[in-house]
Length: 78
Image 1: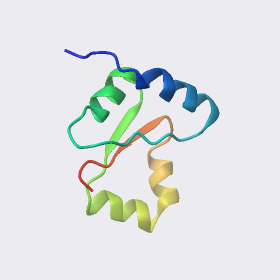
Image 2: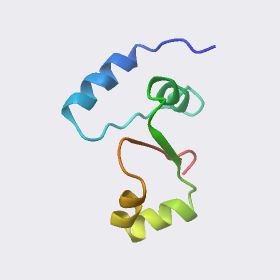
Image 3: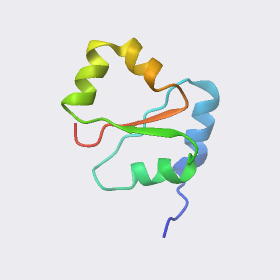
């Protein structure tokens, strides 16, 4: 069961003024769940620490062209 988070309204306010917002916190506290629940129409890319992060670093323009906004980048354990 998903419980609405206080942070949702703050994230939405920040998105009105900024093109990117970082949601960070301890492991296993519900960051990914929050974003999936509150932004269900946004594409999510879970970055594999070796393959995806390396590709994004070597050619960030191509990575972003391949994943247009709105987009959630989930860095997982990287």
